[in-house]
Image (cartoon, rainbow, N blue to C red; front, top):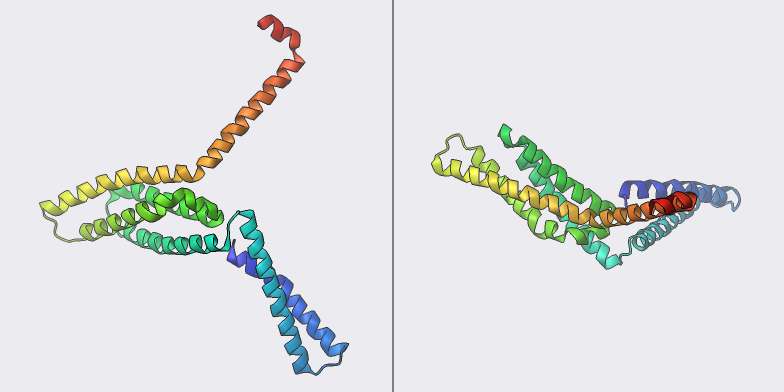
Length: 218
């Protein structure tokens, strides 16, 4: 549920209701200005709240979630946003040109998973490994890598740690790619099913149009 779009829609309805109620109260019912203003604001608030409840129920019904489940998902997505901001900061303080593509891929995948889970909250359950394990690992590794890479003097031990961290980040990037695949796995299955149905329909139409030709080919 896009909070900005929802707010605009509620305001788009509530503000005219507020103005119209105030006008009717002041002109037709001959209320004083202040009581008319109070009634108008009260009606506007009531309409705004009713729309908010209706939007919330519609969203939960559409995504087949309970209010408790959605609160749980929102809480975890909010925490993930903070981690992704930390990840973004640490990735782009690293000055190692050889790992630029890897860092871009890591950020692209994490943001893609987060964006899909925010848009369709039920996808969160397909990415629990990402949210409860892999994201934490990638954030910690990149922050430590950034810290070590920023040291002005590096000894053999630091350089070795940097090499091992880069290798681990490579492996974790593949893990993140798998997380992304898990999030879209249902879509892939559905697409494959639709392709099979389409192929069957096309074959059936061909068989019905050219029965004699198909008989000789057999």
